[in-house]
Figure 1 (cartoon, helix red, strand yellow):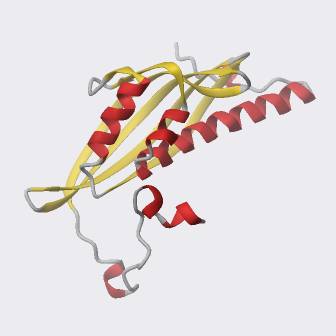
Figure 2 (cartoon, helix red, strand yellow; figure 1 turned 180 degrees about the vertical axis):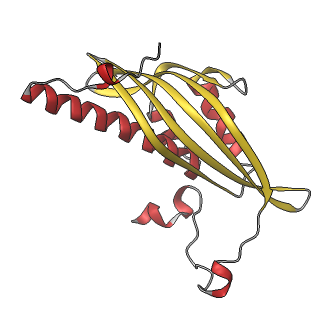
Figure 3 (cartoon, helix red, strand yellow; figure 1 turned 120 degrees about the vertical axis):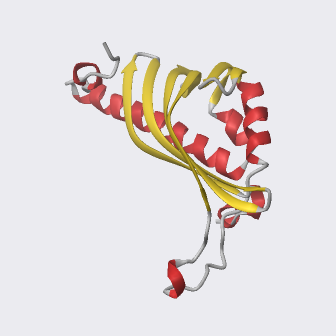
Amino acid sequence: MSRFTLDRLRPPAGGDERIAWLCDRQEITDVLAVYCRAQDRCDRALLESVFHEDAVDEHGGVFEGTMRDFCGFALEVLAQCDTTIHLLHQQLIEIGGDDGWSESYVTAIHRYRDRGELIDSTWHARILDHFQRRDGQWKIFRRRVVYDLNSDRSAREYWARGLLLPPKSLGRRLEADSSASW
């Protein structure tokens, strides 16, 4: 039986408990959003900040190990890409005291060059996280990624086939991205 049933996901009935439950869910959601941002900006410090020091990651048979080793592995792979986009979709979050569990549907697009050809590799996955709140902060303690689907295709940019001019502000890594000075 799945952990994520309506009974287990239902908020507490009481006012203060219900508000605390909503705040906990939002904090976990924010951790997941920061994880995606850290991946796309290739920001190691930000990426490490979403994990507890003793966290482990099982990345669908592609990687298995400590949080620190995962961050190095992920950034090494992402450095080979021109750009990436990690998108969060529906999320199921269960809270139980200082432990939380989530299942997040994710789409990740990696644009890279293969023998001179521009490729968009699109991955659809589910991220299963065990969160722990320590010292008042929710962070990932254990992660398992389940890959569901992948599609690779040649990338062609038309920017609406002339309807729009190509944008002058494109996403970049770290401080080169316009959001760094926002």
